Image (tube, rainbow, N blue to C red; front, side, top):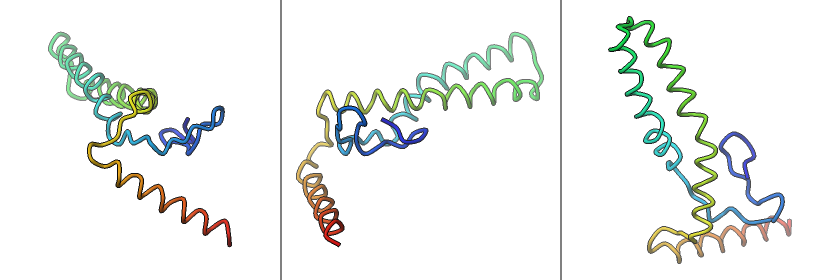
Length: 116
């Protein structure tokens, strides 16, 4: 499904499904922030208040915890969003014609490139 950390491949290597329908955009970052960053923030504040740690120690604890906690789930969340878009056949409201025109132009460009 992925060619690199978060870059989607154009088609599935197993079933040849075209991923052009997928547009998770900023969804993975949003869900990562909502489900990971906010709870971690409360944990970090609780640690700081309970154990009365210094700001430097809190930065040493909180920065890696937040960074890894928010970055690691991005790929599974993106895969989940693409899968849910496929299952629900979701497209942006009112853009069906626009997407069809865009795909026709892409195919025409590919066809012209193949001729050359």
